[in-house]
Length: 201
Image (cartoon, rainbow, N blue to C red; front, top):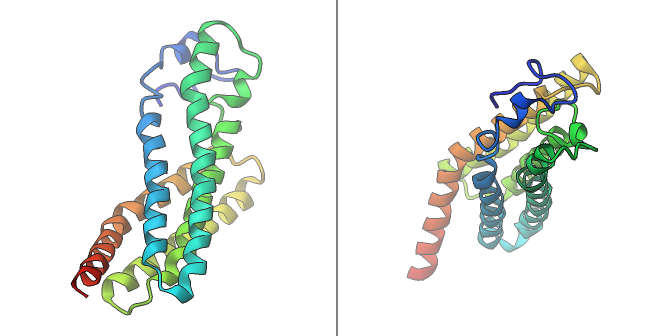
């Protein structure tokens, strides 16, 4: 974002903020698509899971669906409601909903959504128990990612209390994205190998 709350304070409705449209919002369109792909990824993991471990993958799919719903609503409101409201001077509720408010609804929903994404990944970690190096790596990535998110939440909350600003949001988003960037291709390899084995059987 090019217009930071430090530069444009409450109620975040100056001309500087208005000028950020559409640049500060364009990333939300692919982000919404990624949320759907995340659910598809977890659904594929559920299909791959051994029968005794499907309870873990099912829980992961449920959490992924909730996380995706939270973030889809969060982003869709920003791109369809916030900017037109600012341009028309319809500012009731603007400050609490805008992405520029570090203590607003947008940041809170991002924190919740990405926390649930991290928890969903941790839930499916037990699915990858075949003993191969790739599956061990995936398992430790998912568990380690969630542990890092929890540690960050505790540390930021201890330092700042409930007034976390956007610090935890930045951390949890970074951790989840890095985890998916690294683990995504590994999961794809595992699923591809499983599909090849089932076709060859």
